[in-house]
Length: 169
Image (cartoon, rainbow, N blue to C red; front, side):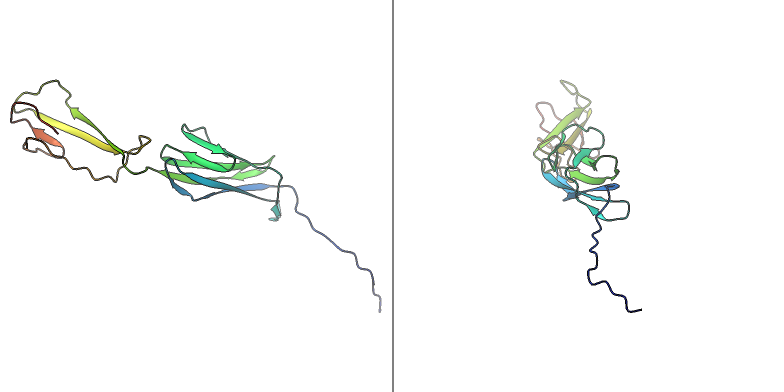
């Protein structure tokens, strides 16, 4: 036919409104008291990236000692937390961040049974755990049990009182 258009039209395809948002956390595993950065991404119904003006990162639920300031997540309590990026009526896909305990900073100990004085031949248990600066249990900490003066052991952290006087466990 030989037809030709010397001035073709330019087409520009723009993404539609956000249909789905996805939250991402970097890093996804942190130590209690440290931060993870939240990034939010959105796509339209056809998978095209959308650049919205504002996202609102939010925690699912309202856990204590956990905050989001801008796009920064912080928690002082161990656990797994879910974050979403809310945007109008878009569906949300959450991201999880795992908060691990920090280094042990102190030992919490208790005697069982708890008495002001123990009779000879009684059994005393020393229950002890290591915790981080925020009070989170540090299960990987290696604790060593001993007594002064040395008492016979009758199991892990259990001692038979065989001497009179002050005893340090």
